[in-house]
Length: 228
Image 1 (spheres, rainbow, N blue to C red):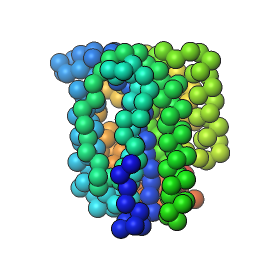
Image 2: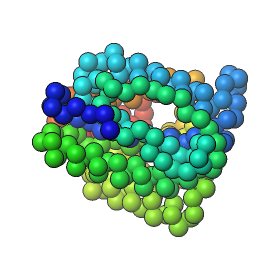
Image 3: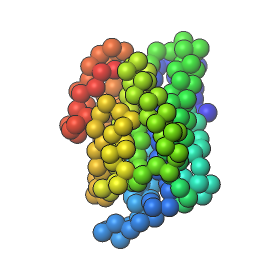
């Protein structure tokens, strides 16, 4: 964990990225680049966008859960990190898509972030969880059902906002619709960098608000309006 609550007592907006790095992410797109290459480029753009926004830089927190990858598991790749310490690093693809386990990790991270902020006496807006995948989860159906229900319950209880993203016409898009009250959007190859810039701008807008406010995000339907 790389956070500084003493020298930076600003309100925070935690955002956990649950990222698919399964073998199917090695699929080449029409640009000649693989999906994982485009995702890595998007993460670099996210870092760049955060660093160019003084508000986001001091108020956004990021953590990353990797689903698949060389270990073919769901694992914490980066614990909570203040945006000014965030540096994008390359993800490597491989293995299956244990997305249910990734969702469980993400939800646990959200609760950890809130607990740490409460203990430090800092306010925060409702955490975000972005879930990006290009295929069907390989988790047991029972595990997937449990994880999806926990996601929906956490949303209902206003513990987190979950944004599902299907990568490059994801075959698992319908499954991603099961984890959120927001529809899964399909991110085509040309939109990766644009999306991560949108993410940085949106988090910056949210973190300027007060808990309970309604914020109008940069225009990316169908996620334009969010309650904080």
